[in-house]
Structures are given as structure tokens and as C-alpha cells.
Image (cartoon, rainbow, N blue to C red):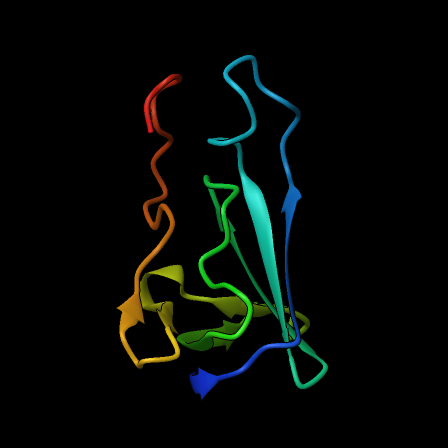
Length: 102
């Protein structure tokens, strides 16, 4: 399923792993986005947000195997600035970055 150029009510990130010596920047984080009361989420090894307040977002999502969670395909995630320009942010790989590198 697809969300196209939608506004969002809230975007929060939550640390999913214990803190690391190198910092939490590369630790696994859950990103949760609320649109129209529905929660969509994905995991990323990056604590920064993929979209900022006032931007429109598009992404592909699917239910998890239990039918309870709406999982975002983070590689499909796009944010659109007010002028319509696409903003690509965040670490979209599932590989961990070496400590001390960004």
C-alpha cells in the first residue's frame, strides 16, 4: 500500500538497543509516524528524523505478519519540502556503520 504526499501529526524516534560506547547515533531506533490516528513505523540505525514538521511524506507500507503493525519500507520514504523538492534523509541501509563514522 502507499501513502502519497500526506501530512503527518507526529514523528517520534525511540531507542531500541542499549546505549553504545560510540553513542546512540548508530544504534537501532524505532521511527513512529502518526497519520490520521494510524501509526506507521520502521527501524533504522540512525536517530535523526527522515521528515520534519510541515513537510509532506510518501512511502510504501505493508502489514506485519500479525496484521497489527503498519511497517514502512524505509527505502521508499520521501519527504517533500514546501516548494515540492524531494528531501532524502537518513541511513536507509540495514548495515551498521563503524563506530566513529557518519
